[in-house]
Image 1 (tube, rainbow, N blue to C red):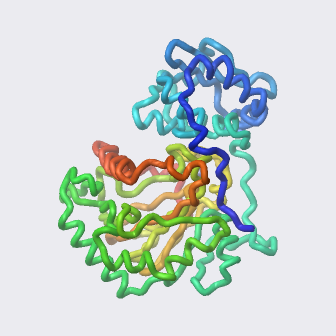
Image 2: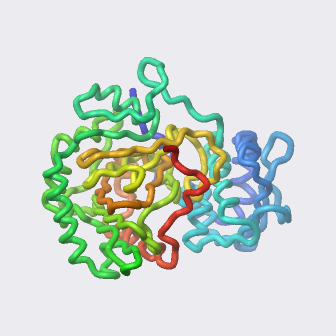
Image 3: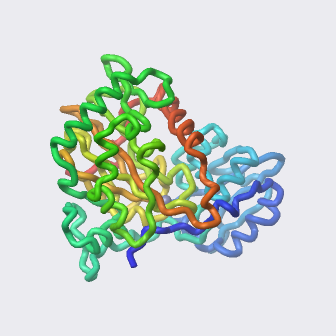
Length: 415
Ligand SMILES: [Zn+2]
């Protein structure tokens, strides 16, 4: 059975935790269950103590011998943060990572850096869920036990078991020639129309700035604006993508939901969200409730080293490492995925990935995806389409005032 289902929690179990019960009850319980695994993570990540101030409580996490130790009061050295009870409750139930809580203004770093904080996220996951942090890189093997060629591109008529195995093991796929150049040209001109119609703060677009000024870099709900795209998303070719693993993957409503986004990546973006440095899509949190879903990139233009190709870390979907603001000490193979018009890239929500900024020509791509069918208890508990739409639109604000060129220097792709 080839599965990408890594879920260990149910949304129906989520409740509001108060700081006092966290300190007196929950943390000591987690330490006795997973303290050694978490302490291994502290050593692997070479991090010191974490001091937390929340409501009127102060506690610190540090190692003592082979174990993690939770003590009241401040340790006084290393990373120190303050947050409210809601943020602590969310972090301890995997609804937010520490790094994301900081980026959303829910957690303040009193001493230390965002990178220090991001390195604590795998340790929190180890403590919470018993999953070793930053352990040895997982093997990546085919169905017969041989190492996979990480650069291999499949076609839709290849053996689906081989394709599914690659996806589950490596966390990504390159599918060649899924759509035709004519189909992509039609999608491209419908993207032009959507870009022409977009307005700043319309709640349906993200904007980026080049030397020529601001432009709509991402059209949200592009499926509702492109009839060609809707047709392709309903095609048996696209349907094949959700049947490569044995899990029950579901696609949102092609007509009614915002299930696809159209991106125009211009050369020379200096502000706004356009190309994103290394991250996991579950980096903000929620891994244990939803991973793995799949994100599919439909290549409206081709992309290579100079025109904005995707980069992935092989097997990062199976590794408990920071999913945001990555540090550079994980020994996972970095793979670049040059594509041609009509190809699709696929990655798991747990797979570390990035896109290069295009240097010589603009790039166009449509992102869509599918998620694991909700567990029966959770079927009605996900956020509504309206809430998801508002959340997605609000992310445009994160791009304002931020450099459009991400920091790739520390962890460059090969080639
Ligand atoms: Zn994940």
